[in-house]
Image (cartoon, rainbow, N blue to C red; front, side, top):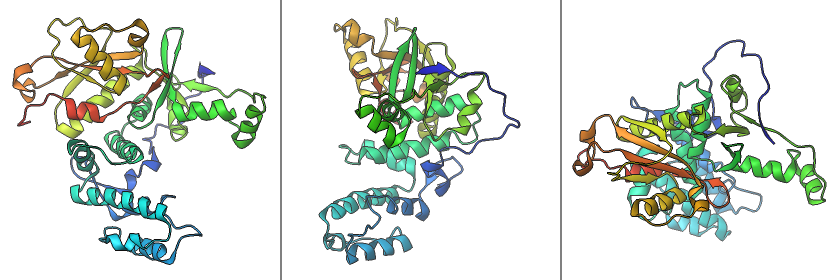
Length: 352
C-alpha cells in the first residue's frame, strides 16, 4: 500500500546528511570541479565484490592474483595470469572487471570514464557498472544538499522505478523494493514461503515523500522504500528537474533551465531527447507526425522544456530554441531512466 506519512515531529537538530555510503563516494578524490578521481581504495572495492573475491573453491593462482591486486590495485595483469585459473567463470569475471578497471585508470575520473563508454561506440560495460557509476556521480553532484526530494529524485538515475497512478497522482517506487515487498511482504524468507503457500503476510506500507515529513528520508535513505510523487506541480518533479540541470552542468559546464510542461505546442519544435527508451520512441513518433495510440501515449509520465542560459553553447542552426525532454514508463509500468541520453544527445556546439 502507498500512502502519505502520518505527521511526525521535526528532527531535533538540522544536520547536513551523509547519505548513500554504498556508492563509494568517500573512496574517491574529488577535484576542484567536483569530478571524481579514481583511487586505489575505490578499485579495491571492486576486488571485494562477490564475483571477484576468492571463495573456498578458488585455486591458488586466483588467490595469488587477488592478493597482488589488493596490494597494488593498478598493477598490470597479463592474460596468462587469469587464463591459468581453474574456474572459467572466475576467468570471465576477472576479464570484465579488469577491462573496466583499465578504462577507469586510463580516463582518470568516474565522469571521464562514463562519457568515454558512451562516446566510444558499442557499450560493452555491464549495466551494473554503469548504474554504479551514475550512483556515485549523482552522489557527488548532490554533495552538501539537505533537500530529501533531490536525493530521492537522484535515485532515478541508477535505480529502476515502478509506477503507480493513483487518483491522478504519478507515484514512483523503487522497483526492487516493490518487488521484494510483493514477494515477501517485508518478512524475508518466511514471508516468501507464506506468499508461495497462498497466505498473504501483513501488508507493508510504502510512504510517499511529503514536504512536511520529508526529513525522514535521511533516516532511511539506503532502504529505497520511499515513494516519489512525479505529478505535475509536485515537488518531486521539480526536484528531478533540478538534478537534471546539475547533471548537465557537471558534465558540460552549460547552465540550463529545465521545467515540466504538460504538452508540446511548439510549432517550431526542432529537438527532443527521450530520457529512456520508451520516451525516445514516443517522442520520435510524435515529432514525425506518426499516430501514437492512447495507451502508449499514456505511458509518457512527464515532458520537460530545457533552455540554455547561453544559447551560443548550442549548435548554431538551432541556437535559442528549446529542447524538449520526455520521461516514460514501459508496458510493465517501469521507469528506467538513462541519464547518459541527455549527455550524448544535447545539441551542443562543436566548440562547446
